[in-house]
Image (cartoon, rainbow, N blue to C red; front, side, top):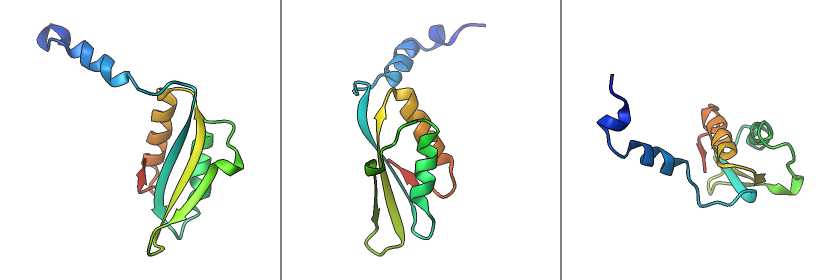
Amino acid sequence: MANHESIIPGLQAITTMSEETLLEFPCQFPIKAMGKTDLELDLLVIEIVRRHVTDINENAVTTRPSKDGNYIAVTVIIEASSKQQLDAIYQDLTDHPHVLMAL
């Protein structure tokens, strides 16, 4: 059976490029999640982020309601250590049913 590199030339280069990032680690990075206002979304987002970041400063968390007050955006500024860490945080946030969007 032939490997994928012989079938699709340049496949390895594409895979390698997708793992690259323009960020230099460690760095300050804002994680933003949005959901319905009637939930304690800020506590939920902090709980999820804490699975991946041990030290979250209380001043690093901000919330902002939507114009009509139906939704809330929670921003947590973290000290990001790697792209893999950020990917894991975003995966956990988007997997949760109460998080409608994560940026």
